[in-house]
Image (cartoon, rainbow, N blue to C red; front, side):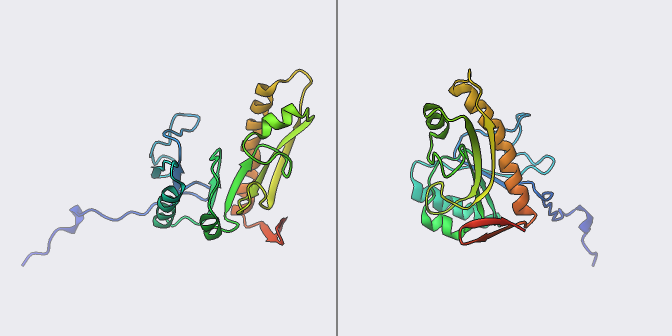
Length: 194
């Protein structure tokens, strides 16, 4: 009896993304794209193959779905950027010191969703951004990295937001790199670089 020709059978190929590249994008927005218009589920140059839109109208069901997706994709580290939702204690506890957020103020000043507006209305002269671990208390997690800029006298809210958003990217990237390099240690709610 002849052996079947196995050369024509499909083969399993596992491709892991390069270190520092996301394995998954889960978003509460219908579209999310990089500067080149990509991401929509593409797998080019280390971009994630798994792309999920999870509507967040009902937090409990959204979190259940998100947790299932994270588990299926074996995700152990989460980065939030402009997510603007409060995660439940159940969700946060499962990823203790493994969820990084970027916040548009120098925490602990101006927590919450309108930080740039609050700083502008208070006449703050130095504004910044904070990358921190997410905890069960809104914008009170251990601080990983911060950056700041001086507000020019003629700037309005629009210019402040634009400058802040440019800085958000840099500070978030710094925090993620520190985390991935295993250079962060959280002790009594304070982050130390090691």
